[in-house]
Length: 428
Image (tube, rainbow, N blue to C red; front, side, top):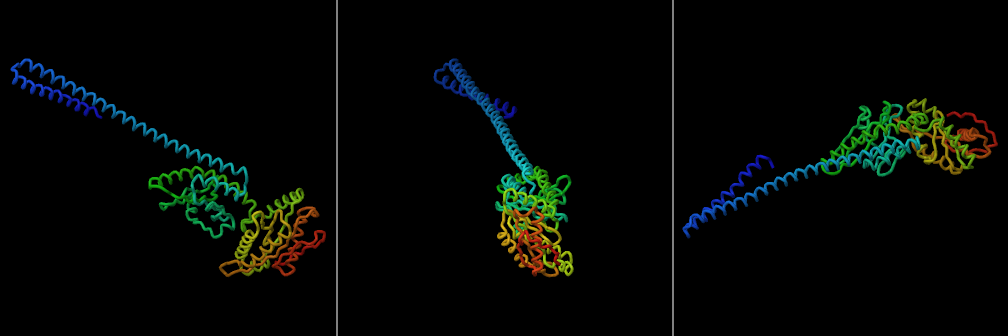
C-alpha cells in the first residue's frame, strides 16, 4: 500500500471519534430532558464519546498496520516465488547442459573403440536418440565428387546401412542448404521439425546430420523446444564432425571411390590377417574372385560411363548377396574379390551361385537402354597345405580362368592345391 493512501486512511480514523461525540450529545439531551441535571449529563456524554472514539480509532490504526504488514509479506512472497522459479529454470538448464556434455563425451569416446563408419554411426545414434527424442536420424556424407550420399539411417529403432537403404529415401534439399551455408537449417510444420546440422571439421565440410523430431504441447512449449534443440545441436555439431572425420578419412584410404567396395590394398591387408588367424586357430575361410564377362565390349559399345554404371551395379549386387561378416573388394578393373571368414568351400559355393544369379537377373539400367551382365567366379579354400596367402589367391585365380574358358557365367571351385595350372588371362 502506498504512503499517500495510508495518510488518507489515517485521516478517516477521526470519523469514529466525531461519531462518538455526536452520540454523547444525544445522550446529554435525554439526560437534561429527564433530570434537568445538565452538568452530570454533559460529563457522562463527553467521557462516553471520547472513550468510544478512541477505541474505534485504535482498532482502525492497528487494522491499517496489519494491512500494511500483510501487503509487505505478499510482496516478499511474490519475490521469493520468482526467485524459486528462476532457480528451477537455472537448474533445468544446468541439467540439460550436463546431459549434452555427457552425450558429447560419449560421442567423442566412440572413436577410441573403432574407426568403422557403420559401428560409429550406430553408436552415435544410440547416444543422440534418447537425448533429443528423435523419430529419425540420418547421416549424410559427401562423396569424392562432392555429392551428398545417405550413409546410415536410424528409423523406428533400426539402423540401416548400404543396400538396406534402398527404398528409404530422405529429402536432401535442407541438408544441401545446411552444408552450403555451414549453418543449422530447420523446417517445422507445427507438429514436427526437421533439423539439418552441418558437420565441419578443420574447415572440411564432411556432410550433415539430419534429425526429425516431434513437437508437442502449446505453441509456447514448441517454441521453447525448438530453441533448446537449436542450442543443443549447435553444441554437439563440432563433436559429431570430429567423430565422423576420422572414419571418413579412413574410408577414403580403403574404399574404392567408384564402387564403394574395399580397395585392393585393403584386400592384401585383410587376407594376410585372415591367413595368419586361420593358421593359428585352424579356422576355415574362403576366397572368391569374380570377373565381369565381356566388360570390354560394354566400354567399347556403350562408353565408359556405361561401364562405370555396370561396375557400380555389380558391386551393389555383390554386397547384397554376401553376408554381413563377409568383405567385398574391387580387386582391379572389372575384377572383384570376396573374403568369407569361417566358411567352408561348400557353403561358399552356395553364396557364389547366389551372387552369380543375382547379376544375371538384374540388368544395368542406363539412358541408352539396359545392359545385361554376367560374371564368372573362382572359389578357393584355405588349407594347411598352402604356404601363404599368395597360393590361395593363385588357386582362386586359376578357378576363375577355368570358368572363363568353360564359357563364362559359372562358378568353378579350386582343384587340388598340389596341381599346378598356370593361368592365361582370358579375354573379358
